[in-house]
Length: 107
Image (cartoon, rainbow, N blue to C red; front, side, top):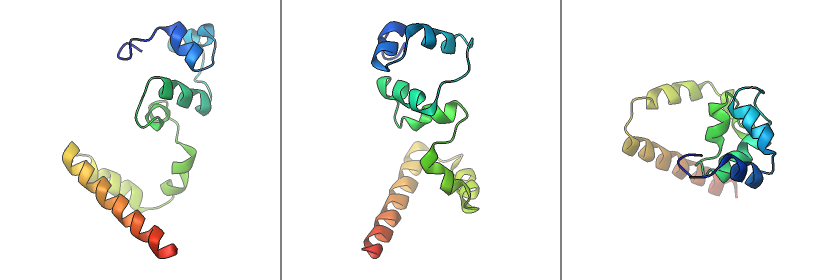
């Protein structure tokens, strides 16, 4: 909120929740809201990607759950831990290129 220079009331209004509800969440007087609410808050705060907020809350985005069953995923994540941002971007570009090739093969 501070980085976006948005007040609690403004954030609550834009995320379609009550200020009191948001205040209780921020003050840890209430458990975390639904994934949908967390994603709305992330979108208002311009978090990219918004799923970062779910991960920070200890939740797994629904569309990522099938990937977690693949045994290579933990290995891939561990292999990228110490990479620079530039190297991570290269890994991402490569993965996106491979995904595009797969998509084209299926057509």
